[in-house]
Length: 367
Image 1 (cartoon, rainbow, N blue to C red):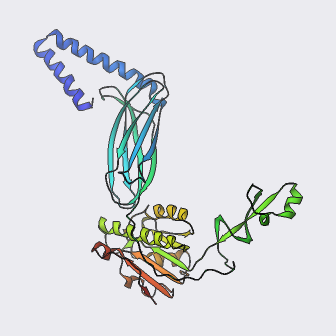
Image 2 (spheres, rainbow, N blue to C red):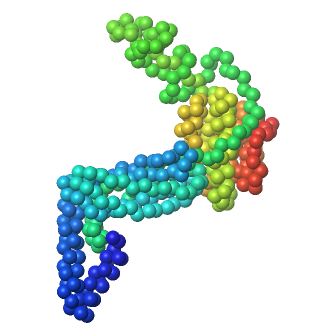
């Protein structure tokens, strides 16, 4: 029962007793107080025994994504009314939603509640369970439990087939001086790590000299050269506040482009900015797993007004953009990038044009 309804019932019992003095109202008041006290005692004694966890549901199944809050009671007393606030924020679009949950927890038991995310706009979604409180059965008195939890998942944008028209010759040899810091590759001239031999390792990987010194078989993993010739710039800076439909198209263009490049077997870099934090990041995409991690990362901060483009920010913080082919996805005019990208081949995908129902099916190169 919520607090308002409980107060109305209490007020009705007191008023009836004052007006009529009938024993029924007196019994009702006594029962109300007895239930209040009996439910309040375990609330006070067991409130610190509550723990919580939040898990995502259906995040990638095509259904409406949802989250499940699981509350567990470690005490031997029942908790009749444990409440919390589920807060959802789409970090890319800025949408927010809240829902209050109320659960009864048995002794040494658990209960759960689901929170459905009805919005269909793509972006990384953060869900937090906050303000956990143990209450009496009527909700008149509440004490903090300190329990809370969080999770995140990504609402993926719709993917469309795109033709980037990129022709890049395969790298011959491994004379690249840039390597992935945490991924194994075929270049054994640049050792990523030395480890114990495992079944299935190639004989060519065995480090014979070190194996003799250590008295056991050890192998060396080669490094993965990073091809720096193709760069996708995801510029989340805008000249003026962008409508949410524009953010939808931005996410769709970026994800569709990267998926199409990856399906063609092309390795590339993604450069993207976090406008509110004035930061820029660079990610190497060599596999489908890399792409699955990169899309949520890009969609974890919003389109925001800034005078400095992602390309300008990268040049100021890191270095001039070094690439032979650059594809820029943004909600800005290509004139904002004129003379700022030195690559021989540059292409622009303007999410504002997509917003006007002009969907891109191919990429047109300049230069």
